Length: 94
Image 1: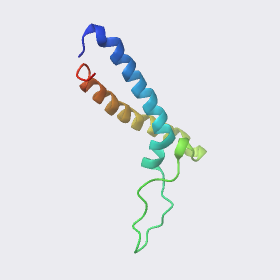
Image 2: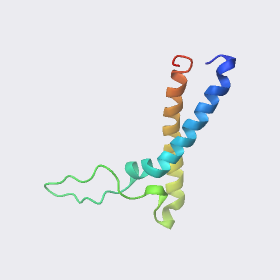
Image 3: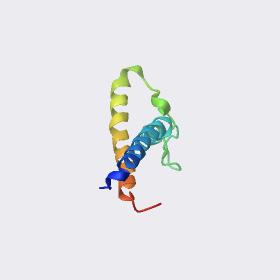
Image 4: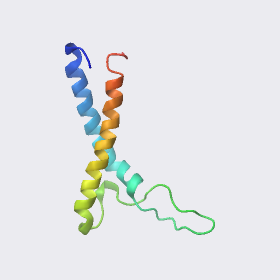
């Protein structure tokens, strides 16, 4: 909760958080989190940690709707986390 005079400022910050978060999630985040790694698992290497595919939502056309809905669902969590932090520090920092 914020005072009426700060409402517009907080709303604009939340919109920017969600917009910039969506772009970053599209550029980088989804591929890192859900992309497949090119590293093969063997006795000396346990596989990759960071995905190397599916950046910019590039993938199979048959999986497009599933991938886009998964992207949107996970973006909602990322945007919520960003706006919670923004609201937590509202009127507390300068």
